Image (cartoon, rainbow, N blue to C red; front, side, top):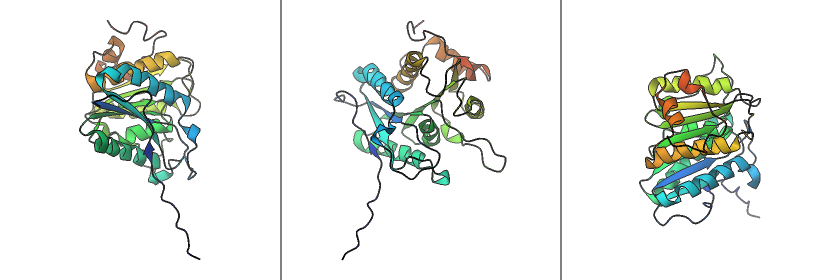
Length: 253
């Protein structure tokens, strides 16, 4: 009896929400959260509500500019140490965008562990911007190398973190952003006061902030004053920018 081979796992891009533009000029790759260690296959529900809501918001906002959005479906649930499976899948997804659409600008937008994947894969040549919402980052260890930041040079980077996040310490994302800012002035970080890991209490404000940043990074739309100020301010001011309640109701100056 012939032995059956184990099928090779592959990452894939989910279908874009709504009708895909006739001519695609920019792409957002949405990176869901994951687990620290797991070789299980991701469930269909792994692309959580936060990622899907962000995808729908950006798809509507950028349709006239030719924006396509895709959720990245990982091979594994876990980051899995040095294998960094989620980051590798994010880089594969950027390659796939180039294959499908040609020379277009890409934004990596991740939540939780997906935020870490977005930051790691941000050095891909097609990527011009990164959004990391409540990024899961490992505890700092003097015996281990720090999270990389050099790959973010030349990209616009937005980090958003709730001050009451009990799953991943917001101070870790602040320290990473501070290191990244030394080599790249186009880094900003917003703090969502009293919100937790899911950023549910101020969901609309977070979505509006991400929309403002992504539309500016991909298509050159004018940024709101708070984002401009955060990018221009030296550390720590531009990395501890408070996200105001009601942000998005009157974005423009």
